[in-house]
Structures are given as C-alpha cells and as structure tokens.
Image (cartoon, rainbow, N blue to C red; front, side):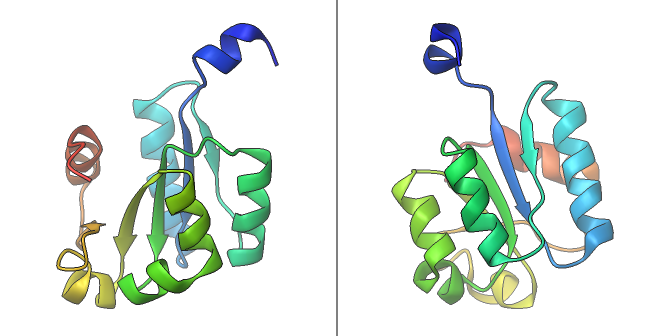
Length: 123
C-alpha cells in the first residue's frame, strides 16, 4: 500500500444481496459508474464480515436485509463502526427501512434509480 493509497483510498462497495442476478446487476452498475472501485460480493454474512477485514474502508453497502437485522447483526454493527453508508433492499426494508433511518432501494429499480441513490449522500 502506498502513501497515496492511504491518503486517497479507492471507493469500496459491499453488495450482499441474496439474488445473485440482482447482486451482479448492482455490481456491474457500480463498476461502470465508479471505475477502479473495489466491489465485494460475499456469499453469506460470514464472508461479508471477512471481507471487511480485507477492505476496512467500505464506502457503501447494499444489502438484502431488514432494518432490524441491519441494526442488530454483527455485519450491520461492523459497517456502522466504519461509518459506511448502508442501503437496504427487500420487503421488510421497503416497509420499515426509511423510518428506521436507512436508505432503501425500492424494487423494481432501474439503473437510473441506483445511480440517483448513489448521487444523493443523504444517509
């Protein structure tokens, strides 16, 4: 790691989405809109936690998770400790995520919706 890497770390994204097609779609959009970004697609929560050890500067995490799980899980706690922006997806997230203070990516979403959400640093 160079001094420049420490001073200006590349953006890092964690995409922990249960549907592999949706996860790949989100990862592709992130890769196209942020060339050079690190994108991690863990298979499960344990792999996501391990990825945080390798990539401690996660900028944004997109996760299929209820707001309650995001607040109570080890993964949610680790992301909060790193001050990563967390975006939730899924039925419970759509019902209760915004009232719990999370950004929610509502389904069905288009690439333009994902890019607009990324451009809005509200949460």
